Every structure is written in C-alpha cells, then in structure tokens.
Amino acid sequence: MTRAYNFNAGPAAIPLEVLEQAQEQFVNYQGAGMSIMEMSHRSALYEEVNNSAQALLRELFGVPENYHVLFLQGGASTQFAMLPLNLLQEGRPAAYVQTGAWADKAIKEAKNVGDVTIAASTKEDHYMRTPNLSEIEIPSNASYLHLTSNETIGGTQFHEFPVTGDIPLIADMSSDILSRPLDVSKFGMIYAGAQKNLGPSGVTVVIIRDELVKAGSKSIPAMFQYATHAKSNSLYNTPPSFSVYMVSLMLQWIKSKGGVSQMDQLNRDKTKLIYDRIDQSGGFYKGCAQANSRSLMNITFRMETEELEKLFVKESELQGFVGLKGHRDVGGLRASTYNAVPLSSCQALAEFMADFQKRNG
Image (cartoon, rainbow, N blue to C red; front, side, top):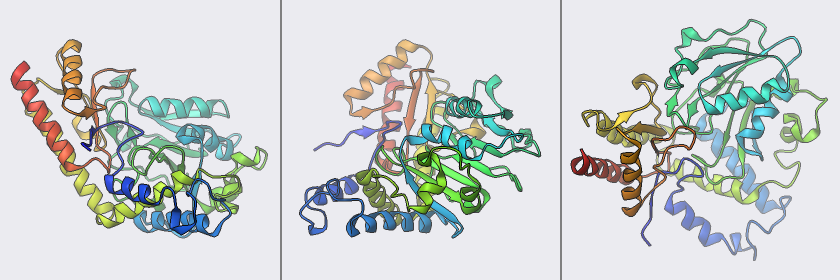
C-alpha cells in the first residue's frame, strides 16, 4: 500500500508502525479473546492501558507529582466551557490572550460563564503573530490567564510563555502538545485534543495542578467538575477506551524515537525544509505568519492568485498529497507537520513546491 503524504490539520497523521501495532491487537487484545473496544473499562486490562498512558505522559512531558493527568471527552471545545465553569470566580475576571479563531472560541464560551478581559490581542494584525510578552496585561485579580499555544488556522505559535506568578496560566495545546520540551510547572493547566499529536479523535488530555482541582466549583454538574474525574482516575463514566489505547501507543512511539527533545529537533528539521522553500521562492510563495511567530506545526502560505492556489492543491492531490488546502475561513494553503508526519513527506512537499514554481512561476 502506498501511504499518502498526509498534511491534514486534524484528525492528523498517525505513524504507520502505531497503526500496525493496533491492527495486530485489534481483534484479540493481549489474548483476551476480544478487542479493547469490547472490554469493560473496569477490567484489569483496560486499567493497565489507562494507567500506562498516564505514566508515559508524565514521563515524557515531565509532569510534576502535584498534577493530575485526565483523559476526558468532548475535545478542546468542551474545555472552552469546562475551564471557566470550574475556575472563573465571581469578581475575578478571566484573562484571555486573543490570537486567532481558537482563542476566539474559548473567549466566547468564557463570556457565557462570567467576566472576561482581553489581556492582549493581535486581531489588528489579522492574527498573523503572537503578542510579545510585554504586551500581555493581566489584571491582578484575574482568576486565570488563558492562551492558545498554537493557532492551527493562522499558523502562529508561542515560542515563550508569560510568567504569571500566583495567577494560574492555562494553555490550549491541542496543536503542539509533546512537540517540544516545556516546563509544565509554569502552567496551572494544559489541555489538548489528541487528534493532532497524540493519536485519534475522541479523547482530550487535561494536565491540571492539584490545587486547581480542589478549587473547582462544586455547584456545576458532576460531569463538568475536574474533581470528579481526578477522583475516579478518568473512569467516572465509560471512557473513549480505544482512543486512550491509541494515545498510549503514540506515547510509546514518541519514547522510542528519543522522547520530546528529539521530536522537537525533528519538527524543526521538517518545517525548515518548507519554510526555506517559501522564503527562497522570490515571492512566488508568501508565508502568512510573521517570521518570529511561525508555527512548527502548521505552515500557512499564499500564492499570487486563488486560481494558482487551486491548481496547486489539484496537482498536489494527484501526486499523493492530502490536506494542503487552507482552512475554509481564511483560504490559502496550509501544511500541518505534526509529530507523526515523517521527514520524507516534508522533503517530498518541498520538492513538489519547487517543481510547481518552475512550471508556473
């Protein structure tokens, strides 16, 4: 079978060896005579999967002991609401950094819960950059500061994070979790949909400091309380068991490749191939994000006309490339280069871009 050059923004590429490992165990997991999808989430076999995935994530990401690792449902979009429901306190506004479509959605949900203040915004720059840390103004009485570490649509990424002191720093890392080393202790909470860097859709990872779990509202439904899921080890209700299993396999794969630091170097090598092709094209390809805010996960670029962009997408698909059309809200072109996208795919794309320019420039 010929594998596609998969640059989808999410659900995104999963390593072939991970898929093959899941395939091998799909019908008969660990000799149980049934698939992981068929067994009870209260069984010893599934609890081992659940606990192993948590332990691997702690090991690879350096999660301190005073944090809970939760596997929840509903994607990052549910976290947009669940976060303020738990942590937005009366008389203490939630502060948000406004950097693009996903930050906007988080802000909209938080406003349904309580007071929100915009600590910094790059809207006037069409979200083509992240703010400098000096631009972020956090109210002294803020419940928390929220930011989106990587905006998949605009192709921007924070390369450093604010120091917030006693105010919890919350990050939506759906697009770049485990793509680079970070000091988790600087964050009160990190959340991420799994379908970009951690496996398939269906499960959301939440890494949350113990004190925030304890401080969460007790007047909201149990399913929306972080304390409920922390107390039950993410087994309060039936979990997305197969998705959690796939996350565990992805974490094993990351570890086998040298861990997060090696993922970081690989991602830099991959994206350099494509950014260099853009920058060396003499304007034929035009990068969207400002250079100092460029994402290592989502490379956004344009061409002189929409007709040329449509031709680029059409010809790329004939060559086995998938997912290079930009988001429907902004158009253009986008290559998503998450952890599982191999270097060879990025090399092939850079070569295709050079050939396309030669024929159409």
